[in-house]
Image (cartoon, rainbow, N blue to C red):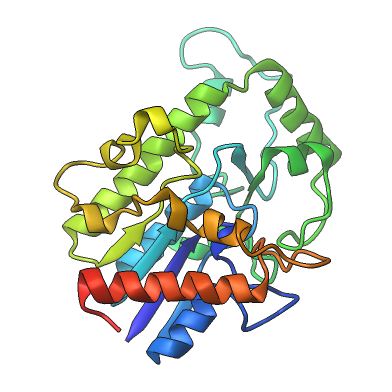
Length: 269
């Protein structure tokens, strides 16, 4: 049987402490094959590509942990416009450039998960936190630094056109669509919405209302005290962060939580 995981760092494996993440502990306990697509700093575009892999592979169970919305996707290579060309009139060259899907400088539907940068693959896009792109930090899931032009473009995006509320709304639509498609296709899963929808005690039904009513409650992590983030915070790491933001003991507690959820609500285990 197969367990698949999608999301960001809270669900990713650790390069520093391999074999200790909750998904690996859970898969060993179940005796199942594990396919973990989660990645530190991944964007919603990247997570949505992970969804499509889940849908194609149809695991026996999937755990999805959406992330924060302050992330973006940029193409791995640039396709600059020649500004000496005409930009006026009907159907100008710049419009044709913007609508040209043959440039192939980034996303390619046929490449599936290789659109997402995992560092060890020939990726088409960089799916990452916006601030690390703006600062051009080293990133273990990139093969190198981005270009100075790309870095400056990200900074201008932040300064001139970034809208946190609109970005969050777009990411909500991205995740809602992916979750609905998985449910309609008969895949058993649980989605944890708390990073995209920060818990508000005055709006306790927010997580339930984030998804269509036809999706049963037990497909959604509704208890704020047992989210991966809450359980990680209860078991802090010592020294350097392993990448999943808790101690290995905390990862075992998270594995226990998901094992119980799968057994109680889906009869799996």
